[in-house]
Every structure is written in structure tokens, then in C-alpha cells.
Length: 327
Image (tube, rainbow, N blue to C red):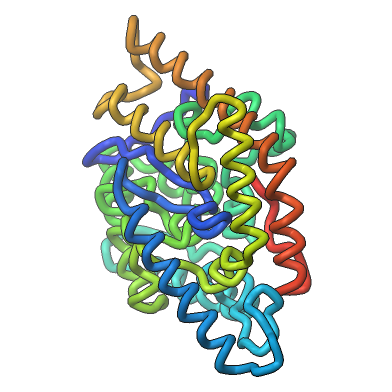
């Protein structure tokens, strides 16, 4: 477990979920026990709407799973195209810089390559494979308390921030992220959930992204197209049966695992620094971490056996390429 720790001012929220809201639908920052039903309801409504559009646009038997007769969304976050992806990042970074300057702080707009490098750190680590990462950190819910995505995504601003005296570091953090320094731009952008953003980050994204994209219930239309395919529905059902055979009662997807361990960690840690627990609480945290690692390896094996290839197959049919690798 890393000894580096960055704790939000107001509380210690740790239930960060991964891109599997409906299959691989949406990585989320979600509070313990909250938000899942609303997002699933919105996603199902979007599925119905998109399939209705597909049916209206073609009388020749085209389907959403084939991407025929429909206007395909972009394959980047929030359904953006490659060009829009660059434009949205550059506009947001420029607005964050201006807001921070107005607050009396230096902030250098982060370039697209740095944002991409930070996104590449979501539950991955240089030098680790999918398996070796899980063997060490599981799903990184109870096992890691550093913030490689945020720190990488700050680019040159990490040095600017860390070079300040401690009171000024706190003021810089509050100006940039409000009360939650874990709700940084890159993480929330990658999660497709800007709802927890505050400070200059919130002010910037609110000027660049649509009101719908700012809500925690947002579901990427590209994920809806993939997840509405009957093969995906069957694959996730098979994943659930596979997990059950290994002793786990998860019905839908990987989100359930992350939600569960986030809630258990919140209950154990509360507002304490998890890297400084002692005695029985430290032992309980260690046990929880080992359980997370074990279930993450079971999850990986079931994904490899039942879902990975199906997602790739469906994504290639719709978009001409697989969209992402599975953490």
C-alpha cells in the first residue's frame, strides 16, 4: 500500500467506480450506496430512445448493435470525436488557468498529451500487467491512497503547487478543486462525471460541457449502443454466473465490487487517514485489502472468459475498432 495520502477537506470519499456502469458504460465517482439506480434508469431510457431512432431510420433491418442507419457518436469521453476531445480539453484548461489567475495563482494550461498520459494511469501502473496490477492493488479501492491520475494530469502545475508554503498549497487546492481535491479535471473527465467538481475546475467545465454532461447521471451514447446488444447482456449474465461459482453474489458487473469495497472502506476509515491506522483497524484494513485483491482476480478471470472478447466483437462491428482495454 502506498504511503502517499491526499485527503479531501470535507470528508474521505473513496467509492470510485470504474467504466462498467452498464457493462463498460461509465466509470463513476459515486458516493457510497448512491447514484447507481438513477444512472441505470437513465441508461435504459437512452437505450430505448436510441433503438427507437434506429428503427425509424431504417426499414432494412439495421440494428443498434451494427451501427447501421444511425449517426454514430464519437468514441472519446462524452461521445466526443477526436477533434472535439482536443477542443474540449484545450478550452477547459484555458478557462481553469484564467480562473486561477483571477484567484491569484499561477496555473499553466495542461496540454492534451499530458491529459492522455494521466488518463492512462487510471487503475494502471507503468511496468505492471493487468494481472500483476491486480495482484498488488486489486481494483485500487482500498489499496491505493496516492493520486497518480491527478498528479500526472497537473503537468507543470504539480511542481508549482508543491513548491508553495503549506497554507498557500491549501489555498491553491481550494481554488482549483474546492473541498474535494480528488475531483480533479482529468479524473472526472475520464469518469464522465463532473458532478463532484468544485472551484475553478467546476467553473471551467460548466462553460465547455453541456448541462446534461455535467450531471452524475450522464451516460455516454457510445456505451449505450454497445450495452444494448443482446450479446453483451448475455456476456454479463455469464460473468455473474462465473462470479457466483467462485463464491461471489454479484448480479450485474464490476461496479458492484467497487461500490461494496468503497462502502466497507468508508465504514472502517471514516474521516481518518487510512495510511495511519493502528491496531485492530490497521489489521482490518489489511484484511479488506486482501479480500479486494482476491475478488479482483476472480473478476478478471471471469471477464477474460466471458466478456472481453464479446465487447471487442461488438465494438468492432459498431465502430470499426475496439474502444478500450479492460482494467
